[in-house]
Length: 393
Image (cartoon, rainbow, N blue to C red; front, top):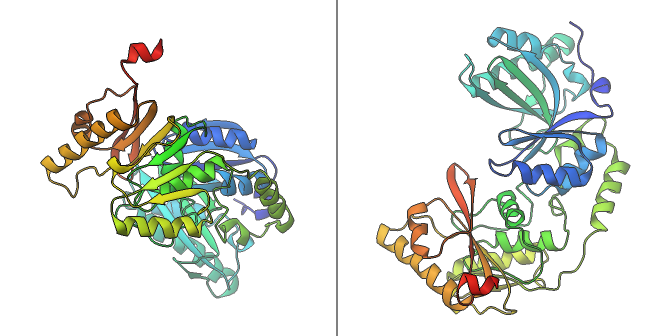
């Protein structure tokens, strides 16, 4: 079988794959559609689409809910490690990187006789370095921290998909965080929750338990059209042999020209002084200190401004609190919502569905999402002045 060459792989109308969180597939599909991607289909934690080289750049720079953008370079059947080794060697690896450059491999395995992802990654690495040794007498090095080329191996049953990772570090690593508080919300998940809420960017946006400030920052970026990758210094595709510097500059310029001002207030508040200080630092790092107000107050001391808007927050789930304490916290959340935030929508993400019952309000929408490994619910509460019936009339 002849080797696959980089020049034939990087052509117009490429098949591409975007990884995301479970529950965010449709949100990401919408983002890709808005960018002009074609033939979009969703899978579990992935979205498949087609696009040209500029689409790779756009998806990395602008998709808020994507974690990685992958370019498949080989799809083949593998029944054991020997067949994997043989077929990985059919790819012309020196057309992607040189002896002086480095690489790293990540692997995931499902429903296969090869059960260990680390062993699959090791076997793939062996095939690549052996090819270099046979051609040049030397081999390139692996670098897990800052590789030139990132390679993704995905095996499901007997099918193996070998891809180049165009992102490098996960796209949730925006670049604006200077430090984090305990259990910070993933940036891409936060961005997805904001879009799932249907926030129309009109009225207040409040996170009364803001921790590191991720939700207010992502809300401001969303409201102002600041690209998700605006603060990142580097993407893996910039190391690829076909990287087009002028095209990349054009993609960034076109996206940056869409940045606008936002008129409504965005608040992040936390009763912890440590969290308040960290959130302030991150907001300043994102250069959004004029657009986001960070407050060191408990929830009940927050004052709604315009009388309309949205609260979106990520309260503790109970991992570090006793059962009585977590029930009291959720009761308190419900009491404050009912007494101070009439006319607002409240969205809460939690994995503790029992504690959520003590909020004392009936959710009008429940969306299943995952916060890391935790299956969670994203709950919508509409807080009416008076009865629900009267409010609708």
